Image (cartoon, rainbow, N blue to C red; front, side):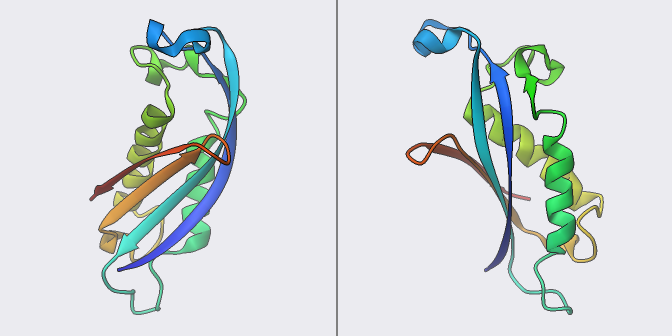
Length: 132
């Protein structure tokens, strides 16, 4: 299995609904390091998994509407707590769509799996990973 991984970051504000979240029910900020890995069984004829530059551009485009925003005001999270896990799936869906519509360039049709990891700090992270 071959893979490439691209990285960026976002700074967001949000709050959570539910007693389980304790003080995080109040509005607070978070900075996430975002890693997205693209997997395929064989390399393209050009010897790549996918165009790494296009993959990074697709990630930046996905993160732009989230960065420096209050996710409590984002319709995508209106009925959800914007937990780290929920954000992983949100980003995964956008990266899956980018692979499917050719935004990652030639070879994106051969991607078999994507993994999105959000690191909250040096001691905590979450991810969502699935086959395409």
